[in-house]
Amino acid sequence: MGNGANYSVTSVLDIFRVAKALQAAPVGHTIDYHGIVGSTMAIARELAQQPETLSGTLVIAEEQNAGLGRMERRWEAPYAQGLLLSLILKGEQLPLRPVQAPMLAGIALVQAITAVAPELADEIGLKWPNDVLLGEDLASGRKVAGILIESSYREDRLEYVIVGMGINVNQQAADLPAVPPEAPAPTSLRLHLGRPLDRADLLIALCMAWVDLLGPERRDIGQEWRNLLYTLGQPVTVRYFGDSGAVLNGVATDVTADGELVVQDDGGRTVVVSSGDVTCRHRPTSAA
Image 1 (cartoon, helix red, strand yellow):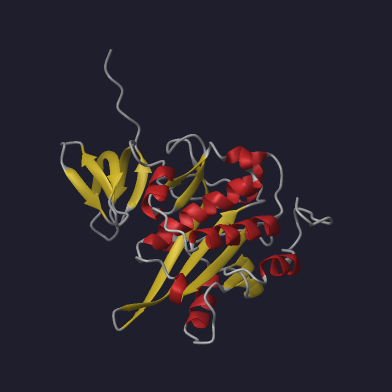
Image 2: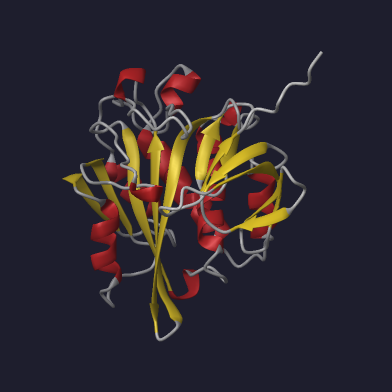
């Protein structure tokens, strides 16, 4: 469990060990650490608007009481049990294309989790567009982490990106929130592994994963992200955002270069989905 000799499952983050490990790193060199806040995203937004705030700055909290995920769902985690943070990217650290931000975040989360728990390498994947699942496939996978992206433009130029990330680390079953029927059931790393994890080790691994992804080496981020998608090849139901209540049933066949989901609907028509909530749909069984 790293260097945390006195680590216990109820410990707050060993932020001093984290800061020492990351003091010279391109990501995590500056940490704005809090106990209980409304939302790390809101704090990061204020910091990102200040010219003196460096890219690679982290905002971290032990608990959020107004944290949001996609579709304005609440992201809840008991005090000192999850990993709740927002990463500020500016300047040279901005993705080459804004659509890559959630892709980078998904890859970074998977790399970090498997770095501290290598036994999960064959049972971790992504649900389009930005949930991290533990399990064998889309149907059985349970959500362990989520991503929220906020981008700001000035005169049509990307000024900064804030990457919100939440990981269920040491929660017990009773600590996990209730979710809508269409959303994947939640889990935690502790529940899945049968042992607690040191959140400081996970945070350091996450920052180093981002350093690796943002490095000078040219990588096919889109393909790396695609390779992690549990959604592809699966029968899905897409619920479009908004009040229309529109639903698309089909099979997820691919993703575009911009990260949109390609679905072949039940009538054989190809539909490109740019936003929506996707759930696994059980294949109909053939009559005997």
